[in-house]
Amino acid sequence: MNKPAPIAVVLAAGKGTRMKSCRTKVLFPVLGVPIVARVVAAARAAGCTDVVVVIGHEAQAVRDTLGPDLPYAVQTGMPGTGGAVVAARGAVDARGRTVLVLPGDVPLMRAQTLSALLAAHEAQGAAVTVATMKVQDPTGYGRVVRDGPEGGVLRIVEHRDADPSELRIDEVNTSIYAFDGDFLFGDSAAVDRLSPDNAQKEYLLTDVVGFAVADGRSVAGFVIDDELETAGINDRQQLSELERTQRSRVNTGWMRQGVSMDDSATTWIEEAVTLGRDVVLGAGVELRGATSVGEGATVGKGSVLVDCAVGAGVEIGPYVVATRASFEPGSQVRPFTVLNGLNEKKPAASTDADRVQIGAGAQVGPFTHLRQASVLGSEAKAGNFVELKKTELHAGAKANHLAYLGDATVGPRSNIGAGVITCNYDGFSKQRTTIGADVFVGTDSHLIAPVRLGDGAYVATGTTVSRDVPADALAIGRARQENKLGYASRLKSALQAKAQKIKG
Ligand code: UD1
Ligand code: MG
Image (cartoon, rainbow, N blue to C red; front, side, top):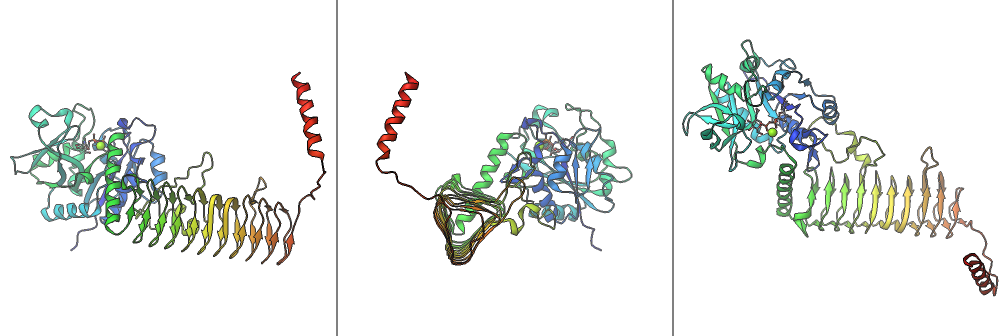
C-alpha cells in the first residue's frame, strides 16, 4: 500500500530580530517573491498535500500574503522552533504520514531536493532525517554531531550551546527535516519532551534529534551540496548576497538560451519571466512578475516591465516603465508578488486582462509609461513622455510625443498629436474616449470623455472636443486669432513703463 502524501509544516512565526525591521523576516522578497511563499510553493511541488503554516509575529500580514486557503497554526506561549512545531500539532492528522518541517527563512530550497529527502527518509524508515550541509563558515548554525566521521547523527548543538570542539564541526543543520509523524506528534510524542533548558531559553526543535537517538530510533543525515539552496536568511546582508547569486544564476541560464545582456550584472529577471531567443536587454533592465518577451525583441536600458507581454521583434526604447498596477496611497497592492504554484487560481493582480501587451513590430519609448491593461497593436508607436492607462493603440496607431491617453481606444492608423490629453476623470468616475480608424487628432487637443470620434475624423490643433465627432468631419473649436498691426512695440513700452514705476 502506498504511504499517504506527506504533510509540510512551515515555521513562519519568528520575528526575525536580526533584520532590524518592523516587517517580519519571512515576508521579505527574494527576486520579487516573499521568502515564505517560495517555501510553501516548494513544499507543494514536492507533493505535500497539506501545508501548515505556523504564524505568530505579524500573523495577519503572513496570512494576507499567502491567502486564506492554507491551514494556519498560531504559535503562542512556547517560544522557539520546537514551540512552533508544537503549535502545528492539531492542524492536521499526522498519523502514518511523514511530516516535512521547513524553516520559513530558507528561500531557495528546491522541490526536487525535498522530494529526494522524503524518498530517502521513507526508504530508511528513520524517525527523523535531518538535511545537513557542509559550510566554510559554520558561525550561527546548529552543528551536527555524528557518531564518528562516517557515523550516524547523534544530536544537534546550537552555536550558543556548543563547546569548543563542537564549534569546529563544519556540518550544520539546515533546519529542513523529515519526521515520522507518529514519532513527532503521536502518543509518546517527541515534542512533549522539549524543554527550554538552553542558552536561548527556548524550545529548540533540534533537541528532538537527541530524543530519537535516546529511544533507539534511527536518525539519518541527508547532505545537500548546494549552499544556495539551504542558505537561511537572518539579516539584510545575507538577503542581498543570496538574491545577487540567484539573479546571476537566472541571468546565466537565459544567456545560455540565446538572450543577450549589455551588462548582466545589472539585469533583474524574476523567475516567472519568459524570454524568446535573440532578445536583447540593455543595462539595468528589470523584468518583473509574469512578464514575457518574444523572440528578437529589444528592451532598452533602464526599462522596468511588470506583468507585460512583449511580442516578437518589439523595440522598447530606454527608460520605459510599463506596469499593470496603480498604487493609490494606503493601498495594499503588492505588484511584484507572484505566488507560483501556491494556489490553483492565479493571484488576482496578475490576470491576463490586466497585463500590458505590446504587439509585434511596435515601438515604445524612450521615456514612455504604459499602465494597466494597455495594448499596443502591431506597428503601433508610443513615444517619449507618452502615458497610456487602460488604452488600446490599434495596429499602426501613433502617439509619438507628450500625450496622456487614459481609458481610450485608438483605432488603426490614427495619429495622436503632441500634447493631446484625454480628460477621462471628472473627480468621481472614469469615462471612455473612443477614436475610430484613420483619425487625426491635432496637437494640444483635449478630448473630454465620454466622447467618440468617428472613422476618418480630423480634429484641428488646439480644439477642446466636448461632443462626439461624426466620421469624416472636421472638428475645430478654438478662439479666432486677431492680428493688431504695429501693436507689439506699443505694448512693450507700456509694460516697461509700468515695471519702472513699481520698482521706482
Ligand atoms: C535554526 C536552527 C539551526 C539551523 C538554522 C539553519 C533551531 C533551534 N536552530 O536556527 O540549528 O542551523 O536554523 O538556518 O531550530 N520560528 C518560529 N517560531 C519561533 C522561532 C522561529 O516560527 O519561535 C521560525 C522563524 O520564523 C524562521 C525559522 O523558524 O523562519 C527558523 O528560525 P531562526 O530564528 O531563523 O533559527 P536559526 O537561528 O536560523
Ligand atoms: Mg534562520
